[in-house]
Image 1 (cartoon, chains in turn brown, purple, blue):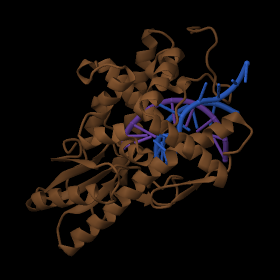
Image 2 (cartoon, chains in turn purple, blue, orange; image 1 turned 135 degrees about the vertical axis):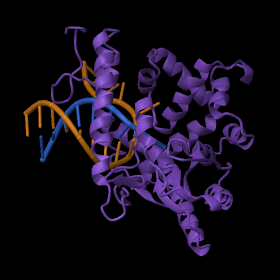
Image 3 (cartoon, chains in turn yellow, red, orange; image 1 turned 45 degrees about the horizontal axis):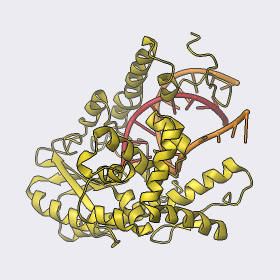
Image 4 (cartoon, chains in turn blue, cyan, orange; image 1 turned 90 degrees about the horizontal axis):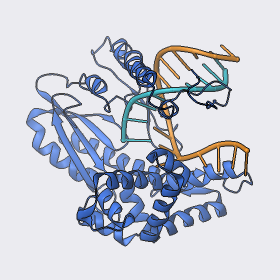
Length: 336
DNA sequence: AATTTCACG
DNA sequence: ACGTACGTGAAATTA
């Protein structure tokens, strides 16, 4: 439709039509129509029509498989079907999620989520006193970051400043560049670069930790999680800047993402041991990276809530307290 | 079989 | 000038 002069192409030479590309075409009505169609098709083909076919003839339930040796960071992955990517972000998506229900009327769905686990791990590894103190005092981490980065008192942080700070906090964990952040914030590279610079001035320990991670990786060509899982980074000394850049971002991200995986695995082992020891009817049924989902026997509500929270918070001791949010409802959506 | 897109954390 | 934020899996399309 000649909406732009030089349309972006994919590496195989096709026109790129991903969501981020379409949204930069301007506000032609075709864009929202295509994206609406895509959303509907995704939900129809991947969930609404696929999942019912996966119902077991033996017990009427859907069973995923977890793979323990696929993800390079030590995370689990879920397949056949993937139950770690059930929709939640859009209204129609949430309808799909609400179809996941307990086994019978004596049960409820319970979800227990680690709050900001990766940022807490980063603060702890970096020994950043400001960020550690923010978590210890239970302050909102994104607002705290916004106050520091934009140099205003906490009460003067606007929703837009908080939104940007949140993107920065995530970007940091991924080793984001000014370009990446500007794309994500839909702002100029200049502003993105200024925000990042300001971030590193306010949180010097985080900057030091990131540099140390890369330098250590250069020495031994691997990085490690808190429990010693290694990710080998054989490209870390590559002379190709793009290749080396990937390895450097992995050097920052893998210990953090992987340590979060270590921690939830310890919690899962302790929770399962406890459920069996106590002969409880509640079952741990899903893991979604920082969340555990339970088919909760109603009469066990109080004890399970208390013990699961405790076992998740205390799986491993680090410099920062772990916070866990528990929700209970009559389906997976309501449990959040 | 490879690529592209998009669902999740 | 180029490429550019981490980790996955599934469906549809393209080659």
